Length: 318
Image 1 (tube, rainbow, N blue to C red):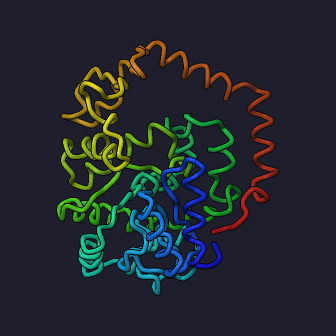
Image 2: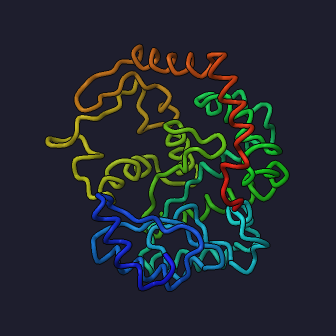
Image 3: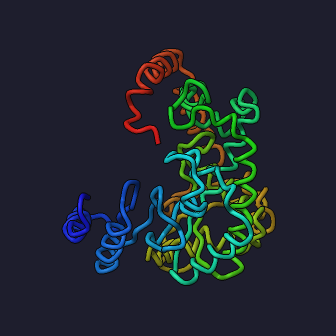
């Protein structure tokens, strides 16, 4: 998108291709964002995304903000880089939190905090130990040994192990902001930014739910945000509820996770479109993936290719 005047045609083309949302990403000006917002709203499409570097969250240019970008005051950031934008919350004090909550309510902003993508970076306190965790072993070795390595891994995150104090500070403040937004009645969504270090698909949703609870949100409300409120946001009344006419996709637990989120680890079965998969079937499927990941040929080739192509694959070191 080069000019705000292009927004109408761009959004029309995206919707005609069968898409239901337009993600606002980096390098967009306030004028371009506002044009996109008007064009998506006109067509009933969602517009999640990043508040680009240099723009302030409180302006409300992005209707569904991911990762709390734009909450740290733009002038406080030393550079246009995701490490700074994610973890340098030194400018976020109580007055800023109040300002952000007020702006959220005024602008009708929806927030997807992805708290897990901050808390899991605390694994870099002890990267060697983190490599042995379940979150690390849900993906092939190339991730824990190559992609996530803080020195030779993906360029975006190199050196992150030297910023643990900042990560701890930002995580604490993000939890506080999440609590305040919830208490103010602002809409929140469960999301994970899966693929970031130690943020695997599936398990990261459970971790994010626990993060919401750690922020002070009651478990019943965490489940509502993760299920029927998410379905409502997607305009999908057939999802997120157990009722006649809803999709028969369910999770069966041995213990009650609506009383204690630790019970998320007690899955006994899943039902997908009415078909039952018991724990033994799930375990066999996971074991098959493990055999693939651990196959010496796959492991050797994938790890070697990852090492040789990593820098070439990253077009911009944000």
